[in-house]
Length: 446
Ligand code: PLZ
Image (tube, rainbow, N blue to C red):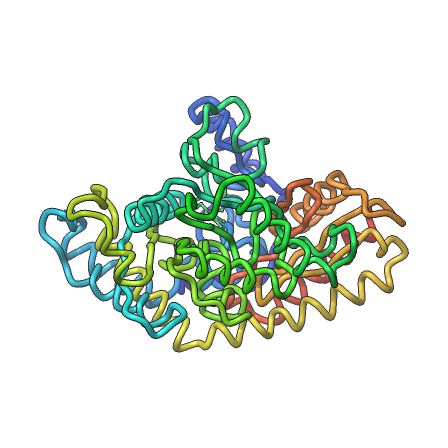
C-alpha cells in the first residue's frame, strides 16, 4: 500500500481550488454524459483514504463502487501488476496465451460455490461478463429468452441496458433495446405489500407464475439475478426467494446466473453472496473486486455449459489482460492473507450497531426506513418521516453533507433514496467509526 497516512484531513473546501481548476478543464474536454459523484480529483489512494490534489484526505466509503476491496494500492496488487507490466503488457490471449489467465481461471474454479467441474472465460468489464453469460447460456440451451428482476442492474451496453431495470439515467433515449428480455418481481422485503415475512414465498411464486404463463419456461435460456441487488438499493431478496428461483431454473433446464459483480469477492463477508443460502449457480459473473482496481471480469461455471460456445465464439482483444490478471492474483492473495471475509463481517457488526443507534437516538432517526445489507455492503433507505415514501432529497443532502466533511459516500436505489456504504475491506476501525460519526452529524444538520 502506498504510505498515505490513514487519517482524515480537510485543509480546503471540498472540492478545493486545484480540483476546481481541473474540473473546469474536465467540463471543456470530457463528455457531459459521464458524471462524477464528487468532483474532487485524486492524487493517490490506499487503505481507507483517498487523497486529493489539494491535500485533503477523504475517508473512503465507496471503494470506487465496490472495486478496491483490498485498497486502491494494495501491496500484492502493485507488486504483481508492476512485475507483469515490465515483462509484457499484452499479447492477446487469443494470439499467444500466458499463465496468469489460466491461474485466475483456476482460482475462480476453486473459490466459486460448488465442487463440480468448472471453467471460466475472462473479459474486461462487468457488462461484458454478463453479455457473455447470456451468449453461453443461449448456446447451451438453444433457447433465447432471458429473465431478470425488478431493481436489477447489469450494465450499460445494449444488451445489459435491456437487462437493467432503471430507466434514468441508464436507458433514457438510448433504445431500442435488445429483445427477448423479460423482467419479473423480486422479494424486496421492505416494500413488499404484505410484509417482509411473506416476500420470499409470494415474490418467488409470482415470478415463477409470470415466467411460466407469459414466457414459457421452455423458452428461457437464463435467469440472471444479483444475490444482493446493488445499484437497485442493496436489496437482499427475502429468505427463500433465491432458493425457489434456483430450484425452478434447475427443474426447467434454465441456466441460473448469479451476477456477483458487486457482491462478490468477500464484499458481503463470504467469497460470494449466494453462499448465504447455499445457492450453487450454474454460471457466476464477477468483476469489480476481483482485481484490486484493474479492469477484469469473468464468467465462471459448469464446464459443460461453459464449453457449449463453439471454439472462437468467445473472446475480445483485451479480455484477461496479463496486467489485470496479475492484479487479480495479488488481490486474491490479499483477501486470503488478511481474511477479508472476516473483516467484512466485522464492518457489518460495527456499522449495523451504530446505524441502529442513530435510528433510535436521533430526533429525525425515523427517516431511516430500513438498515440492510451484509458485510461491507450496507445501506440505509431514507423515507419521509412516518411513511415509506422514498426521500431522495434526504439521501442527496446527507451525502453532500458527508462529502463536505471529508467522507465519501454514494447513493443508489430505484428511487434514489438509498445511502450506501462500501468501504475498502482493509479500512481501519478508527476510520470506520469516524466515518459513522460524520454520518451521525450529517443527520443532525439535516
Ligand atoms: N452487474 C451487479 O453492479 C456495475 C455501475 C456504475 P461494469 N455497477 C456499477 C455505473 O453507474 O455505471 C455492475 C453491477 C452488477 C454488472 C455491472 C456492470 O459492470 O464493470 O460497470 O460494466
